[in-house]
Image (cartoon, rainbow, N blue to C red; front, top):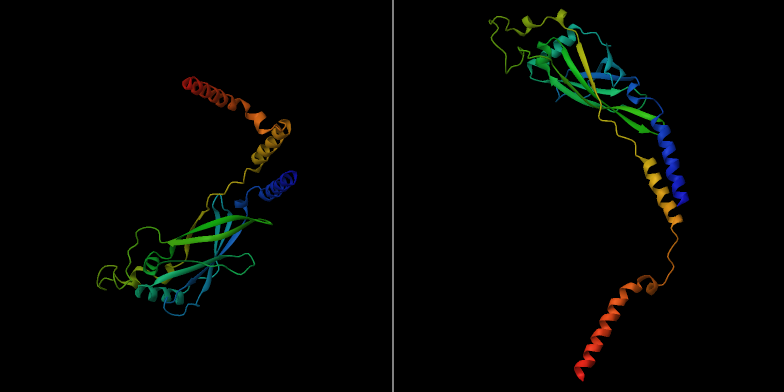
Length: 249
């Protein structure tokens, strides 16, 4: 039992040190790489290009900084317009920059809405902090992208209006000079799991051991322990025997 208590106590110390490796794991800085694909989803799936870096300074407070590493140009405008006219999706894949093999999280939005919305977007990130031997490991476990507001889509073949309509032309709505990434970031994290209450468990085990030591074992025989239960049986037997003898006279 003492060996078991030692193992449990050692686990409690190690886990406590691990939990206090940093005051709050959600206050660590994390860099997210954002890549996009302006090709058709049925085409070349390897045409991914890095476009932005999202620096998360504090997950709990949602403090972020967005840096667009790829300037927007006329060629990109043409690709996005063609994708919008083909009713395609603007696809993103994201991963954390931690020096390891990237684990991608994929998401997408309507390319026509994004084009008509002049590249305004809201990217939501789900960040998890899991305990490890070295402390805590922050990882990106989910992402989504939406176009804010109810934007009118002019380029899609499903919603395109006549060129003679006022402002109905896809080119009239968006000019190349107007396009630039306008990114807002929302950071979320799942509920942090609570540490196991090993201290209370150890106290209960210690109390049980103390009680066992203070209460000596009863080494009496079976009959010595339960003699009082046999008395009614003996009396009943004597009475029944006496009644039988009287009836036989």
